[in-house]
Amino acid sequence: MSLETDIFEKAKLNKKTIVLAEPEDLRILKATAILQKENVANIILLGHQPCIENDIKENSIDLTIDDDSVKVINPKDEEYLNKFAEDFAELRKSKGVTLEDAKKQMENVSYFATMLVHEGIADGMVSGAIHTTADTIRPALQIIKTAPGNSLVSGAFLMEIPANAADPSSKAERYVYADCAVNPNPDADALACIAMQSAVTATNFEISPLIAMLSYSTGTSGKGPDVDVCIDATAKAKELIDSVGIKYELEGPIQYDAAVDKDVAATKLPDSKVAGKANVFVFPDLKSGNICYKAVQRSSGALAIGPILQGLNKPVNDLSRGALVKDIVNTVAITAVQAQ
Image 1 (cartoon, rainbow, N blue to C red):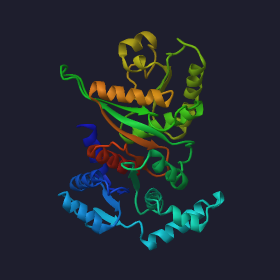
Image 2: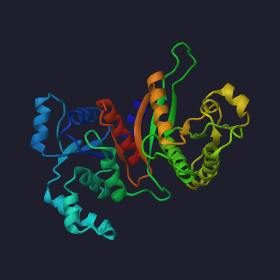
Image 3: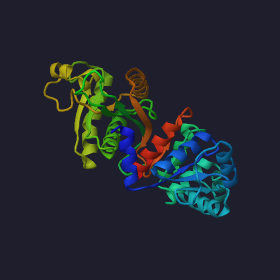
Image 4: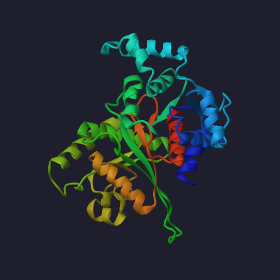
């Protein structure tokens, strides 16, 4: 089965409720219709229900607001606003946030939606069709916060490279690429944390993590400050991943070709348990990760699902403002699986 199908099936096993903050964008409503039809997750839409129902009708979207699989919560509802403002003020009182400040902040749908997750009304949140990544991540960091043992939030992509049609024995390959979305210049501690988070993500999606800490050096073939950072990060990653009790293998520093190609691996790092078969790739910085996932996606026809935000106490995920309906559906499904 495809990666998308596997994620859908996993989400259906224990349905979760995901809040979508931007139903004024028709892509969100079209994605919600698919999610309702496929029974992947329960959805909360934020907005004025008559307006949403009018958009559904005018655009002939096959979607039913039924207060079960799909319900609407008005972010102007004072019952929610007052409770959320009080709780947010309490959460942020050490930062000088007053109740009046909190009430004003709750007028922002990103904050309101994040409070729905914090209060347990929703299990996860997806936003970003209209708002920026910062609009999504900032309230998550202030309200949901990072999970114990996580010093940061990072962004990973699930990648599925299709089988070679000319080779009947070949199979689709699945990978985790990180960080491709959040941290521009991670130091050794940050890279170690990203490796741990990516191992957790891989395990959540039934990929047994074989982790490559990528560099321009394989083993001791190259030298320089960046290689030293990767060596340090690899040692720290071992400690972090051991602390979360995941079965894994880790190699670093290692070049991309040695990580994925068995022939190259046999020459460069013959005794490695990761070289030639890595499936979790930790890039040395954001630019290399972002460039690489897009290059692989466009040149190989790979499916790229993400970014998946890693390291939060509860799942909040960001959409590209250019996201297709299919991308939104996949992101909600992934968020539902994370919430399990």
